[in-house]
Length: 389
Picture 1 (cartoon, one colour):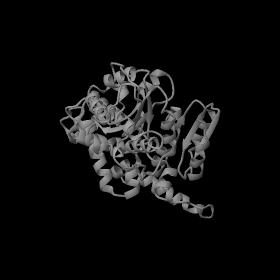
Picture 2: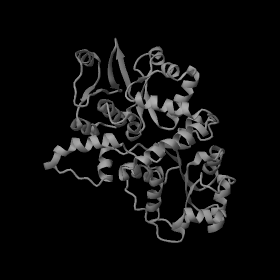
Picture 3: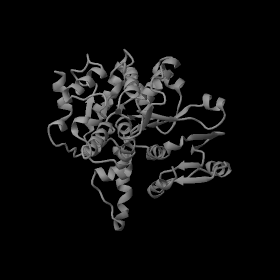
Picture 4: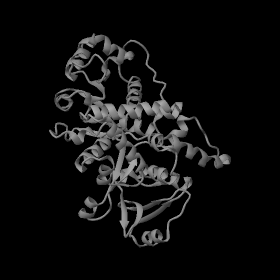
């Protein structure tokens, strides 16, 4: 039984393997560069954002250089694997191909957190075996690893939804310079659709609805033993409504008739599954703690399914956030006036085809920063690619 399952997941052991997947070069190159590094590569991100596809693309690249019997892939949440540990599965792989302990093996372990002992098992592989490991998870698992088995052993690669350039590539759209007037139209379609690869390709609203249900029920309700699924769905709707705005845990608790502590736990569950991202208010510790965090949707297609395609300014700000997420931004809030983002080197206000208020202009001018950017249209958004990382 186990042997049959492993062969099903590793067709390259018996035949030529071609993925036919659309590549995402930035992530693929990063992961391929890590091939000879002594580390476990943890690929994280929202469900169905493309983590498995990236693993398959890496495998396809490896197969051009390495004999197929040294490459192993498994989705650890697959039916039939419930009673097996990761070590049981890898031992069966070794038996199939008669691998000794000196053989250099390449393991791709999808949805690794479905095995309760994954931290210790990965640590043992890392410490004692000649193995390169790529894993994936749809939750911020390392934040939950209180036993710190993997500290210093793991490099995390968070996969984001498709960028606008990737969206155009997936849709096979090429905008000629003579047709640049089409840019804004396609950009608004991108804001409406979001960046989940399969949804971009199919446009099937049922797919995005089913994805939301899977995350809510598998990753939040079932994973945390929550009995009232209606509360979770209502909390999800509130978070999507607050996308691009400050979210008060206490206010959401009052709306739903739950305690602030319960609201805080729910908020954390949604963060851990990448449905939302948050930034704090800039300032001293007491200001950061007392102020609400600003919420951004993990994917705009999911957000629009709940709220409808409206408030383009908030959607645009959400996309700007993803462009600067790597700079760890905060937001500025003084005397009732807000500036969207501040980083070490940048002060940024996102305004989609609109202008700042007079009060914002004054505050924007007064705040010291090396660089000040007003991102107010598609062209200025695309120019953000030039920001130094």
